[in-house]
Image (cartoon, rainbow, N blue to C red; front, side, top):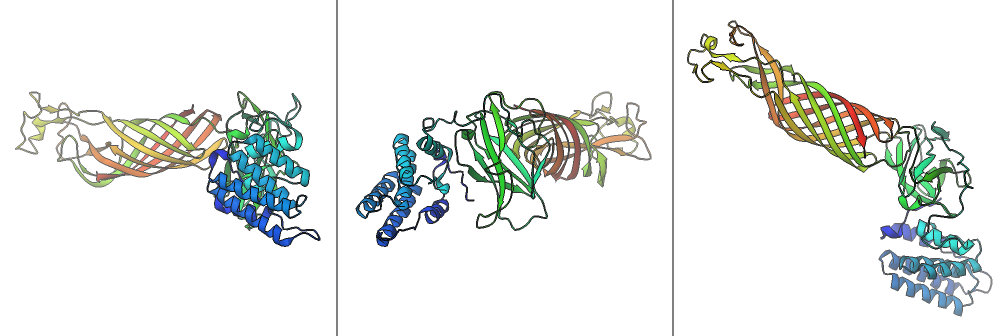
Length: 487
């Protein structure tokens, strides 16, 4: 099976796809008494026309195909399959050139010559297939994807309400049974690690009212594959699909579903009802908002904030007491999100320095440097940093593990105790000194976590984020948990 998701709204198509279509779909059949040289010339004109079509030169493509049709007429090829194929290519070019009515007429001429002819698969897209459907059955106007051969009113698709994984051959998927009209639908599958020899996995889908399936290559992440049924294919009441693993020469090796027994997605104005985040749900809203809380610990070096004489050469310390972590992001793809994350740390446990007792250790201290009470306060209890973050999701079901990487700026503080033979801290100067060490202001590092989708738009998550801080060094790890929503 050779499938393509070529769309008139996404021109240009790839030259490779067109050449495959030209080489594989232009027939070389000839009957006794027919001129083989004329057939070869018509075939060459078709190939040149497809090359012009690929370059968006629709007028040149039309002229070349007109020459091919004229040659068919003058060479006695009016009933030959090569002329039927030329009419198909002419129809495709006319539809691309915003002349759908003329394109439908060309398709009808092709069908008159060869009733079982189909659109060249490398050129197929929903708009062309809709026009071809109109030519074969007198269907809706070209470009109207809202009608066609659908299930009777009130009849659910065969997989309605399905939520458990369906295993067929070496391909496992959780069927999608509900979707939203005019919105893309994400389909994901898992291929058995024991299954080898395939070059790609293809999602084949058929919009309402069409006879042919259109295919798109699924993106791979390990044994997981994901692809979208585009919005232009979800305008009707139902869309059908199946998944197929193919070899390098596009021969099917394994499939879940088929053209004869595809899965069905019933489409409605308000999308899937109930349930939460099952694998294969339609594309969710792209705006992300999350709020989490947690705490952390890190390896630090440096001097104290309050008393620079408090020095640590290296050791682990907590970022007491906690932090609040808001995050706002946007899903560029179903599995990838860019976001801005804030980290608002509340620091506790530090003690003021009593200069009266500090003079017992450092006689040269300016006793009035912190005011008339001779007490140096602990300063601000807030440490702020901001991160730009990329997050990759490794699943699309209820449980979605993810990895992330962040780059940020700001301050992280760690709190340590500095014991000395002579206490110098506290209001009375009798307490052990507890001071904070500043790290940053540049941070970078990876993270990871697990998102639990309770509904398609709301869930819970827990994550661990690590960063290296420079030039004031730290290796720091935060553990956070919170809630998130998508809009």
